[in-house]
Length: 191
Image 1 (tube, rainbow, N blue to C red):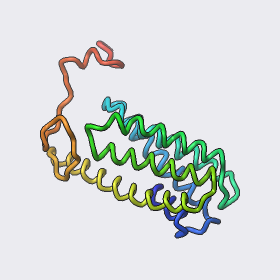
Image 2: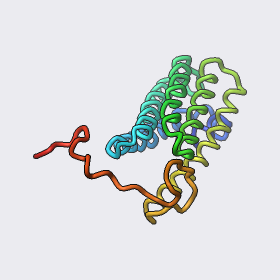
Image 3: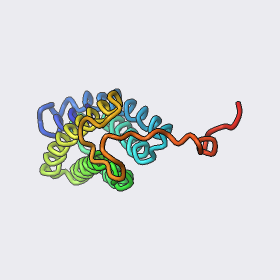
């Protein structure tokens, strides 16, 4: 949602004077949703997803707060540096998720979007802003597809839409390994 609304601002669909409203979408929707996804990612022991969602949650929160406190429609070098670093940091979980090609592609596209938005915030070039908006629309479509594919897979207990996983047969879901569960970090042997 935040990626789509921010694209609307960057592409001129939302007037620049309404940037505070866009910040509220980032703050009220993106931050809490991705924070919860981050926590579940760690609970499911999916470090790539958890790290990616945590980076996204923290970035949306910080970018939203800077945008809320800035004059409407203004740019911020601080936001630019934040987004350039966040885009770079998102490449870590993207590379770690190479065996999950669709998830990797979403994280890499989010990284690209943050890098382009960061370049705009830092330098002010209109081409950066437009490119970030277009990549944001692509990211929105990719994220919706990925969410649908994973949700259908979870409901049907089989692959319904391609997620391009490598290393396991299509249509198979793996169960947690219970034989080593007691040795996992954070698991108590007795209450």
